[in-house]
Length: 265
Ligand SMILES: [Fe+2]
Image 1 (cartoon, rainbow, N blue to C red):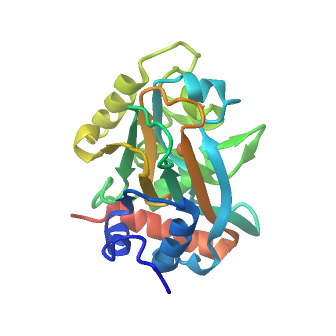
Image 2 (cartoon, protein in one colour):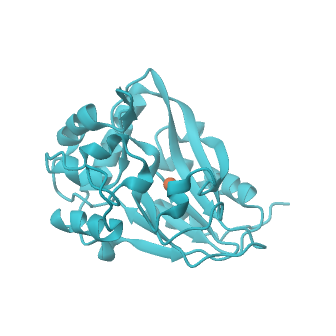
């Protein structure tokens, strides 16, 4: 017999807002799997979405991610904007969980829905051109993706102020300038968004996750970050993706992302 393991309103809340917080969760993987069945329609390739990776984050070996008190808003493994391979992997669903029997810190998990961030503007061409030049990558490889949420604003403005971040680690964004000088990442990220007409404090949602909390995020519609130093391996991160997303589907996803970015309230 099927147990009811999340509120019946949760999938509709997720489809409306791009995220939902479930409380008092046992067996996060099972809950996420059942939840996924309710929300696959959120993505054009939703039928192919499956569990891809379970990890403890921040990982002990990622020294900078453990030590930083400010992790800038980002999309896990990136927001695909232009296709660069015949098929690619797209991570659609991100679940962050603190098991019931473990201690929880006071760190704030931050979320930024992209809906309406660039309301009423024509941005598809600017976004495409930006990613062609500055898509996240390494050693000359361009993934065709944007990792850093701030780069959406950089792209829409036709600027390249954040292009230097394309090869930087997430923990460095806004915490260092182009030349590696240390800065206040929180102040810097807020100032950058403010310059582009976005008051982050009005749009961000933040959660101090408790024991048993499970935060389910549409990774293609909501960026995430944090404020505060998270103890190594505090979170269980479950990442769900589709493996063989075609060029045509990436083009469709880009149009969906642009529709979300530009929709009016
Ligand atoms: Fe992340």
